[in-house]
Length: 217
Length: 230
Image 1 (tube, rainbow over the protein chains, first blue to last red):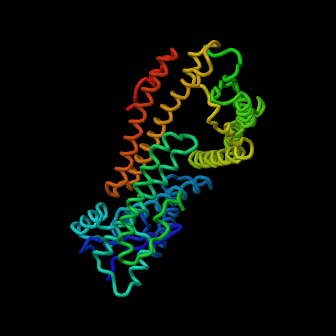
Image 2: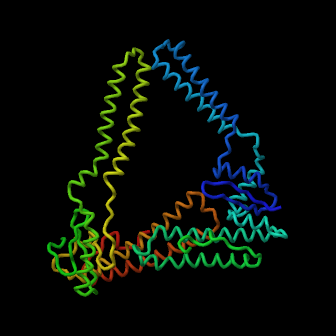
Image 3: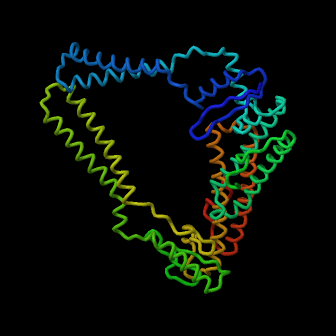
């Protein structure tokens, strides 16, 4: 069984490979969501609760304005209703964010997952990698997958570095600096790519285009 | 003391309605130099829009202020005219109205700005005709040979370019670290550090070169360019 976590994004799916042994993918997914990779899906019960709290807040606001404040004009009642609704809806939002859900992981597991995410126990990989690994027959050994995933990720990072460098320093505006530094980034990417190709060729993995810098595509 | 008259190799060009001094590569033949200067003047021409357009660029701010003032007065007068005696309701209504006017004024100012005052792009930078830095301009006189101005300008420009590139790299890397994307192992940081080291070394050479050019021409480098900035 391969260990992947996928999350739909705005334009493309994000995918992670869990290389560290003994780390459950569900815990990794929860930690990634907690870090803001994807919002926890809003349940209908939460929506109804928010609506009810907002409505109740408005009613209570009007009642307080009338009975406690002894104000009876329409403008005062409207202001009271808006204030009450804001307080009611806001309370639900705060409680929803602060009170942990039923899926709280034990602290030790959370720490393991965090260490894996911050180290190289969990690797960001292209979606093509997941498709390839899951369709491969016979299944690829876990260690090979982990090595390939790390080299894929390193190559994509090097490609991003090169693109970022070319974005901040332009060849026509700073020709001297560009001539000095561009080869460093090119060579950095070429080295990562060579290390990737070595493993990819051995396993028969077709390297996706995302491993090439956009400025070289 | 800035130059007072145009001469071969040192020409004033009107950019953004201001006179800027440019120095021409002495390696160019007179004809090629004249062509390069004409090309620069052509590409700088759209930035000289005259006083009327400069005033027009302030329109969005004027629209914002007028809308805020007019809307604010209207809200205050309107709420005052309503048959309300309770202060709580009247003040709430006024605050809501003022907020609505503020949002509307900002939106209106932005939509006016998009239509009225497009950004003016400067002239296309040229390798053969380059602007003389302010500090160099204060040093040269009408008697300084254009070739010396070119050498000094090129040396100062090289220091500036390498320094700017280094800051750009360090900046991009710093942002990456702040984004929390820097935890991708030593690879990314190491390559950026190597790039910065190369740029620092090149800047040291460029500073030495500038010093040599300065000694040969009598120019005194500004403090900013007298040593490697760390």
